Image (cartoon, rainbow, N blue to C red; front, side):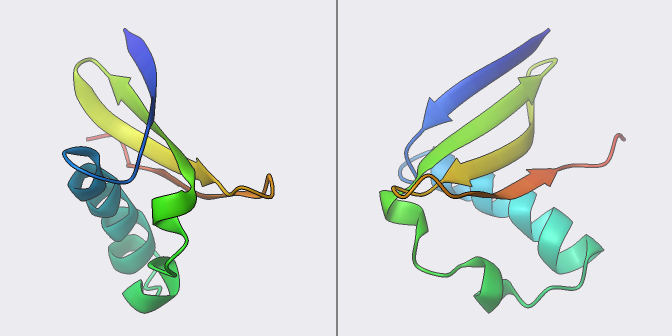
Length: 76
């Protein structure tokens, strides 16, 4: 079953969001982590996608409506 959660970039969710983005952007795509962590996260609205009880994807929307930082883990 797939679930979508709208979350804030704080508490239990920040490490999950960071881990997914690190796996996709930093490790898989070789993007410098400092470019991903741009300081916009605390004010953004984030989503987490859970598939079969495991978080597998994330994305964010900034206050100006810009959607980005979409990251989906490879199937294992």
